Image 1 (cartoon, rainbow, N blue to C red):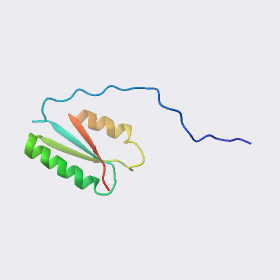
Image 2: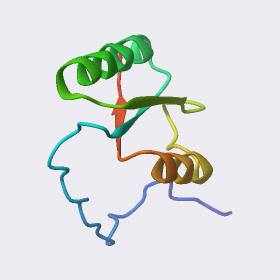
Image 3: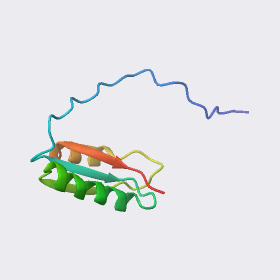
Image 4: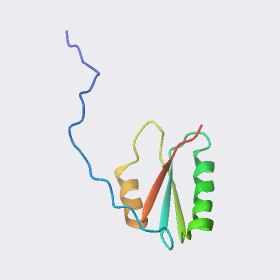
Amino acid sequence: MKVFDPTAGPETGGFELAARLGSLRGKVVGLLDNTKTNSDRLLRLVGRLLQEKHGVAALIERRKFTASMPASDELVAELARQCDVVIAGIGD
């Protein structure tokens, strides 16, 4: 008989936080919708406010396939190439 343990141990790898931008003026902001209810509406509102109050030059909206999985490597790479900063949203 084979028994599989579905639990996972803690991740040991770390990461470095990206440097903060001094200003959002003239920057491109990515809005990553996680597919939860109202996530898209919340992100669009935040995006508009950032444009109006902080001079964001452009918004790039993308949507994950599902809220329960991380964004694909391709989507992350695309946002990294095109955006100065990305906001990942939640909803409900």
